[in-house]
Picture 1 (tube, rainbow, N blue to C red):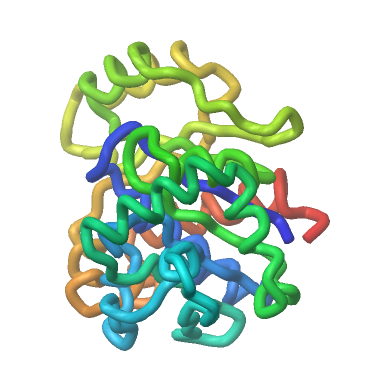
Picture 2 (picture 1 turned 120 degrees about the vertical axis):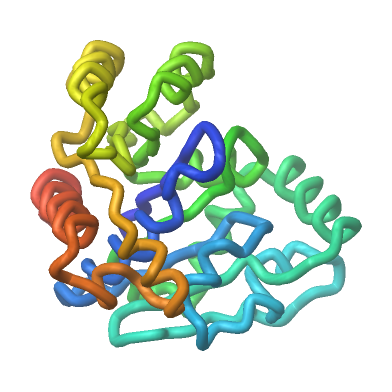
Length: 249
């Protein structure tokens, strides 16, 4: 199984949109894909109306005396969604303490029998640094850090710690929600290239209101409007990933 972990310095950068849309594209290409939600806010689950975000998720497997497998659901062929699950604040503290005390817990989980046939797993983490992102770092075959095309994100990048990824883990940065109407975008993109060099993915994603429309309909933009700019850009990202990272999958 190839594990692609998605990270962001903060929320609101479109990380979850990447997760669900890349998963949808890969699944349509014939790969068997799983998306594991590591965000207690259950934001990934909101992209699929048929999935009840209040159900048992993988977080419930970390609670005492829990022996049941988490719910997993397939909105389309070759695609499996594993929600975080709805838990209270006291349960969340237990979950986070368990993850902090057991660094290999997520690695053990993704070896579960029901995931044996998965080709690619995408892990959607909450913004910032946490026990969830720590776990996702440890199991990653490759990682994407997602940023906005603005000065605030560049300052956050300069002031942030580097992620502690496995030695052989490939890593790239990608710029999201580029506003084509802003004249400053060229200057900002040039600065991003200076900051991260060859680690900048060559296929940024433009701002597109159809992404929000798709979320309102409980689906992905690649399924809702495959003619849109965002869908085109995400297809480009998927193509790069297939060629550079997933060629042998």
